[in-house]
Image (tube, rainbow, N blue to C red; front, top):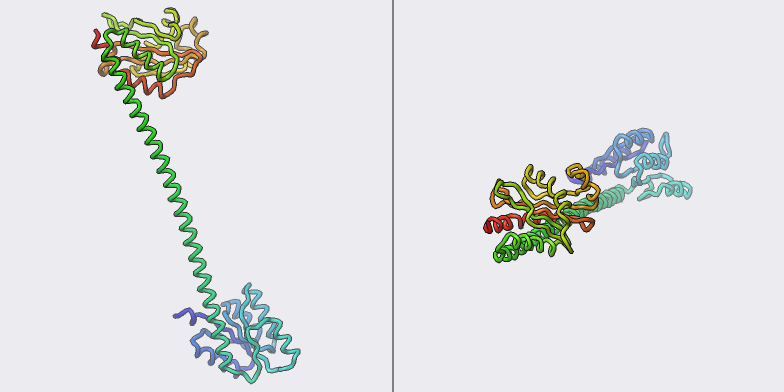
Length: 333
């Protein structure tokens, strides 16, 4: 069935012969035609199935044709096109008929061919309007879809760029850290004693991270960690303070042999009571020296007092240089 055949025409006339003539004339056009012999019947049919075009006599037995048109339009909530037929030619009748803005006002005797042409034109106009509205709706849907896809692509691109930027920064950081480790290893080749090794260690941390204090420990013949050096800018701290910082960190590293970063004030319970009053602002980084898994031969404890605390970048640097430092100490034994 074509879109044109779907158009529904409602004919309203209280003269059976004329009504039948109109039905036959428009049905021959391939349209869906229904008819009513009264205004009320027309209203009932229009409520059941809204017409596309209304053809009505001006004077009906129960209603005025203008009233029928207005009621049908009110129920349909749109301007249903109407063709008004009247057998009266006086000015008052024609003026009343024009109130409802008909697409055509036809007088009797009726020109059937003119009626057919009028209905054909109106059906074609509505069909074109429906097609235009459907195209507009499709275009709006496509536009919304394109806009959603564009936003999705933009988000994906943004996420990809952000991911690539993060990956680039991570890779650049790793490459930079590897370069630092390579330069540090070249320095360690020249280190002939443990003092040389720890001096290179301490100077590297100070260059990369800023002013720092530290304590170096190595295992003695009884496998006990003993302090072999104290470092600091401008001068190292006294041995009493270094011992107070060192003892709890040795216990922590022996329990979990890895680089440990902590805020001393927050972990005050680890330290002896006399040392706790010195802990505010102290940041500690413990670096175990392990030439192989499970073999601890030394320990470096770095700390700061009120300066910029150690960061994750400092922890990464300590992780990277711990093994070369341990191997250099092992070589010097």
